[in-house]
Length: 537
Image (cartoon, rainbow, N blue to C red; front, side, top):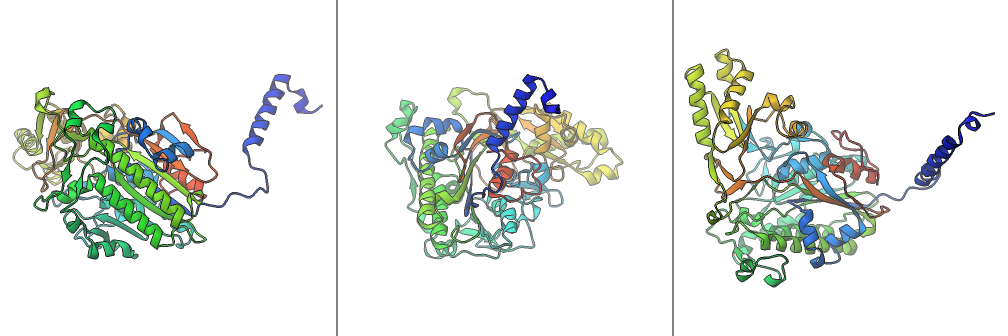
């Protein structure tokens, strides 16, 4: 008698059920796999919120967010661990690796030698085109989806990216991409870096024939429909519809424009031009086009309650997505041969201050004052000297050279500084980098550790109290008054792929699985820093 016949009936039944289930999901031997998608469109949307997608569902067209949610895979909560800015979120999504691995923890980092912040992707070996910025993906320490796609095709597949900001554009194009274009803060021109060898004609034509600087004089952002049509608006918001202009005398006009729905429309228009004028997805190889949009609350609104602008941005982006999808059908390979993934990123932690009449607790945390007081405190204990080098992005940087010269223990100095800063008004917590790396900091210590880049982080990391404004006294740009607000570290995502059935994933999904999941659908290897397995869709 065989071993199988010796099994109890209940065990044989379970075995049969398991085998039947396995047979149902496994493709038959010899069965051909469906062809690879001919085009990949990767879209990152800063501040994308599932709440607003639900609120505006009935007002969306059929070809934008509705198409994604009805025909694709919907992931309700993509978890980033802790809130990250646009650059760090994009790097995490495209590498499948946390900032501690890919090296991008924020758009800017502090340069200890020069004692001032610099772009995280700064590269003096490059030259900017239509910009004085010198940037490249050299500091991005892991490969990206676009890199792996280019490598898998032997360089025959194209990889282009378009964004409002340089870090996002460069990260999406990766190390092996053809080109990355962004909008220059000072001139409004489409800019790029000499790191990339390919210069598409369309951005250059716009810069010469129809530059933003000329168009911005008459451009205004007003509601795209009657203000009464926007849902859940209080009556006072309906009485005075918003109207935003970008006057020539405003030195922040291009930064304000980049934070508006108008910039999203220009990015979408350039994407449509790419699809119409370049053979993306129309060859026997897979190409990639990556785009970045923003749905963060508009920081230049006169009112902290910018719900009308936010809803208008969602409706306009829905229309822009429809334009892109229509262009894929009309000029590209068709949506049936295209893989689209749209992933949101967490809302910004810095938002407009509520009006004083509401009496919400408020304060100002001055970085210059904090550094001065901390230095005086350390001098009182350890003698005269400049013990603190600087401050950037809620991080304090100590003078390592002086600490070494005086024979002090760096870990002890960090701890003294953290405990002093924690007693300051406007600081809710202060942790040393040693506490962060040993997973003893924050309410989510493992995620905090993953999202901290040890080589560029400060000696002490602080959390500003809710409702307090962090004033960077040494910043050379004028930014609107923005205060700290707790925000979730999750955002929704959509994947629309050939041969993949629609479904909704309600449980939280680690953001690091997006890259390996997309790569699995493309049948290419995952980025070299992606350690998590892909979703089985």
